[in-house]
Image (cartoon, rainbow, N blue to C red; front, side, top):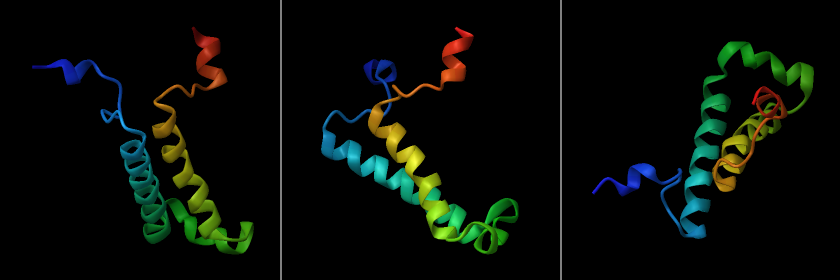
Length: 81
């Protein structure tokens, strides 16, 4: 009954469903940063070029990590263990 609790996220096993959930997470992060412009992000247009590109880069992180199945680890975290 509780077998799904012991499965790694995402729970879907098909690659097509993983792509959809990863894309949804990336789009949500992109839109949240692009539309809300938190932490004074409205000044990035003048300083760093395209703000949309910056939002895309932040949106790519959850997309990539969801597809990798949590197998991406920081070198900092590896040095702690």
